Amino acid sequence: MLVIASIVLYKHSYEELSPTLESLLNANEIEKIILVDNDHSNWASKFNHPKITYLKSDGNFGFGYGHNLAIKKFSHESKFFLICNPDISFETTELTKLVNFAEENPDIGLFLPRIMKADDSNQFGARLLPTPMNLFTRRFSPKIASYLDDDYLLRKYEIKQPIFAPNLLGCFMLFDSNKLMTLGGFDERFFMYMEDVDLSRRCAEKFGNLYYPNAYVTHLHEQGSYKNPVLLKAHIKSAWQYFNKWGWFYDQGRRRLNNKTINDI
Image (cartoon, rainbow, N blue to C red; front, side):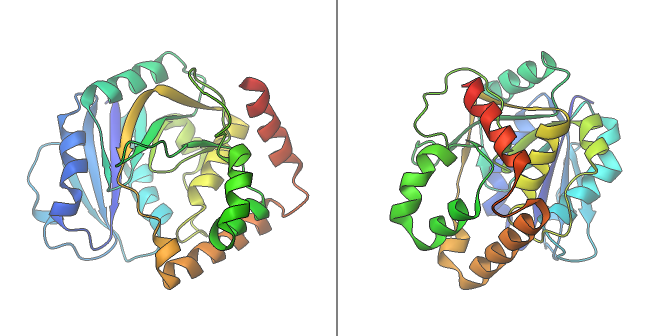
């Protein structure tokens, strides 16, 4: 198969997921869609379509855990594996452009198109690896964060051509399947948040990542951790785990990969 996509469900209704499902089902490149149920959906197991495979997890053990079930069971069947959020929509021509670009770059592990918000603003999916200051000011000091984000989100650059970036947003990650299996998928110690930064970083280090701004998808993105104290706590915990793993203020790998991005631009 050319592309297999996986979506992790947790209390998502069919109505919430329908724009994403419609986009994926209409795409000729996508031959199988894995619905990983981390809860007890009352519709997904009954959804009848030849492209759909339902996979019930043992419980809500996280975003990465859910996707890993699909990766381990199905990624060997396809050339590319798409990690897709349940709030994505796109035109089929945009996915075709992204997949064609990926096929032209067989040595690269991860590809990301331009990510647009529902209001047509850029979500800046290609990013540098974060410092503790980047993440914590974005939660608690928006004025300082806005200044830092010019660098962190690469906002001060006009990116019109594909570039290397070590941190690609996790809502629509197109992986080379063999390379994704080599990486072992997500680090399941992250329950939610930062697992995409960690996996993107590992892929950038081992195989390379490419941001492709000439195709785009729309992300109906709500920053839940900005509004929900439970999600905020989960985000802080995940950030703590990430910096404990990679380093807080002394992180040579972060400096090297970020400099590579800036030089590439």
